[in-house]
Amino acid sequence: MPVRNEVSYAAMVTSFVNIGKFDKAEELYAETPMNWCDPVCSNALLNGYLKMGRLDQAIRVFEGMVEKDVVSWSSMVDGYCRNGRLGEARVLFDRMEEKNVVTWTAMINGYVKMGCFKDGFGLFVQMRRKDVVKVVSNTLTVIFEACGRLGRYEEGCQVHGLVLRMGFEFDFFLGNYVLSMYCRFGCIDAAINVFCTMKERDVVSWNSLIAGFVTNGEYEVAICWFIDMLQQAVRPNPLTLSCVLSASAGLATLNQGLQVHVHVVKMDMELDLSILNSLISMYSKCVPNEITFLGVISACTHMGMVEEGWRYFKSMRYSYKIEPGPDHYACMVDLLGRAGLLDQAINFITSMPLEPHSGVWGALLGASRNHVQLDLTKLAAQHLSELEPHNAAPYVVLSNLYSVLGNMKNEEQVRIAKKLKGIKKSPGCSWIMVQDKVNLFHFGDRSHVKFEEIKSIVWTILDEMRW
Picture 1: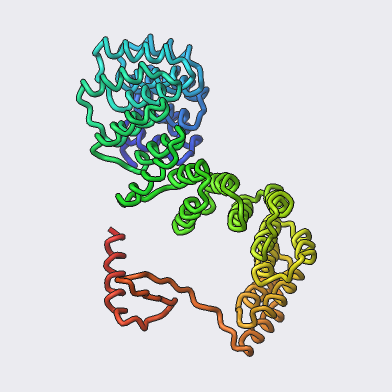
Picture 2 (picture 1 turned 90 degrees about the vertical axis):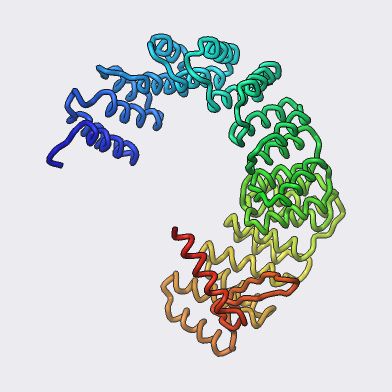
């Protein structure tokens, strides 16, 4: 740029900070004329350091500033608070001639986050009495969260009353904090009242209420509210399903838990850690049967919990007198294989008291492919081909593994063998129900009677997504 001013310097420093190039930001900051540094350029660099947790560098910039504004001071108060240095934060706070709502909220939040509720709440009361700055939703959420977390029922009710008197709109942002606070107090009726008076609700609102019921042992009510949530077309997230699984575990109702598990699978949330933990807890607390153990071992498989999986598998026979079936053995092979314990997996298969079915060899096939074990892949592929002669998976997996290993000759031989036997890989498919009729769609299929109409609608949706 032939002509630069304080705005252009500030914009460039901010850009470098935003992409994490602090060396470039510092270099440009050092080149900035002194009368253009403060406060905008300095604030940009200072806030960048604070966001990265580099308080000492932020202090250096702050102390070097000739001109500081309320943003500079407020940022440093917040920075000290986030690092637990409340004493230094309060010194800066008291030195400030001008404070805004961000300053007050930062100092209040600093106190309550460190468990100093009396100091934080006292500062909130002082802020209200001074009537210098207007209380905003962010300040109130800090207070509500602290009251709920620290069990300050009386103060929480007082601030709730204040909010009502001030005429604050209970949007889902503020309402969720009040709702969560009452749930933590165990005041479920008050929580329901808040929920029902909220003009807007999001998934957090529903989660807070459902979690409140679960925490307070109201498991059946939690499940009823979850059903209501689905009927209101609110999409659950992992926390929702984890809470409902906990409710099912509390009731020890396997049928209810299985229904929720199916919902988890449909929403492709099986691998979420909180859900996996809840599944294990739910299955272990329900009356054990073959399905229960299959669900528990499967959850252990996805979490890599080998020892726990072994313990549950052994307990079937020795503690519950339940004989493991073929699917339980397949699940154990999958558990060992995913963990890379392929020697244990093959020893487990050879010691099985029943004939391994295709699920067992399929689990070993997938594991040996993932861990690039050619001999075991060939073994698993051979057995799987004998059990399911028309299954293309053994040929596809073995061919791909030869390709990865650079053995193009054997790869070609496998592909030729697959072709000569007339084995084809099943195309991907999906289906939907429309007016009690199943509509099946295969990959690359154009035979549907409404193909052109469907294609037109898909293109319309894609165009709208681009906008």
